[in-house]
Length: 318
Image (cartoon, rainbow, N blue to C red; front, side):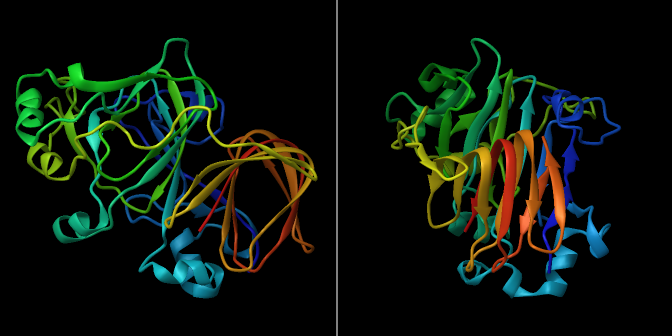
């Protein structure tokens, strides 16, 4: 086993922009690049290895050969690869949507639900997003407001700034607004229920489908219960600053401000490093890799590496 550099799967949803291509250097022939799935074992878009003897293989193919030891004992609690990490460039606003929890998603969709964390990498002045409701609603009022196009009157609109953090528990109504660039750590799922898409037409010239009944089944009809915004107490360590972003039974995510040399790797979990800015060198004692803005590194469980340089990284693990 060795550290894997990954190239992402790119989606071209209609609300996407061009920053993932122009600033992060991700390849795409489409006019827009909405999402880069920088760490993915999902069948809808797996990441591909770009370094070493396994270059050209997908991450699922590599892990099938390496076996469960590459994921670590913490991942043993999950039936499949547990997380999916994305960069999202919302040039236009996303649909108002919700994701189901595991029990509903497994029963209805045949895959796990979706709890996620957002880190605001950048945003335009005045940008905002939807995070839950301003008050509690009944299911009858929820359905009536969706039908009557008045749902936004009770949505919790939050102005955002760079560095804001939001934990999107499954069942939380949400929507990324226009002009926001987000790093997302989520469960390995691609199930989304749209409540409103503002009447937009898809690539086929038809309105994109909504999923009202399912959304009504799974939405938590209350204001958000978790703290959000500029949260996470920063701590200075040798080589930089670490800021916790989210920690739950599904995943842990941290922001690393690298200003020297930091050690990456865990005995009981794989580690993902996503470079948001700057660059660094990764040395596992055998090989040295240069990682720059946009680079996604998968470090197998039980392996440690020195990360040296200056930059901003999302570090994720189980």
